Image 1 (tube, rainbow over the protein chains, first blue to last red):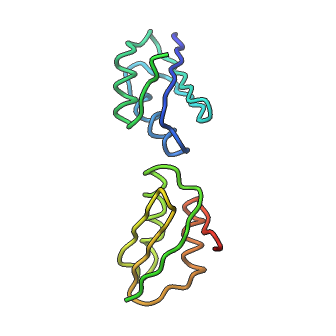
Image 2: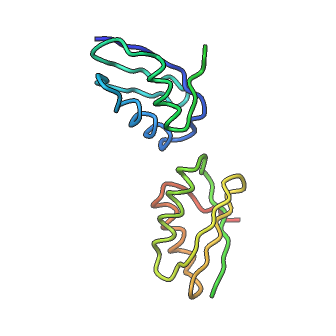
Image 3: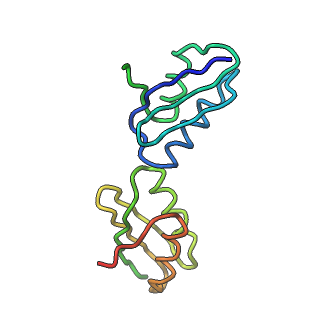
Amino acid sequence: MSVQTYHVTGMTCGHCVSSVSNEVGALPGVTDVSVDLASGAVTVTSEQPLDDARVREAVEEAGYEVSST
Amino acid sequence: MSVQTYHVTGMTCGHCVSSVSNEVGALPGVTDVSVDLASGAVTVTSEQPLDDARVREAVEEAGYEVSST
């Protein structure tokens, strides 16, 4: 199991959290997505380590950005 | 035809705009809902003048508030 945290910018409300959770949660192997709206922290649990680029794409698909820091 | 503008607080993104538009747009007689996210202005076009209380209920149903001013 792998747990990785990303910082996502641009989320402003619970709907944004849902959008990000749904997109990232649909990635193959992802078993849990936890989003803290206030900090932008998105913690992704997956069966195997994820390719960061795939996570970034999913976040962008939802309409937000992964911060590079 | 009646056009009435309300001021809604708490909308932060396009998802919020959609939620308010959908709830208010579902009121009987409403033919158009236009939301300006920046100002919170929600302009409702309807066949007959609307009961403000019904509009307020719809906005609250979506999770937001009509400002009393």
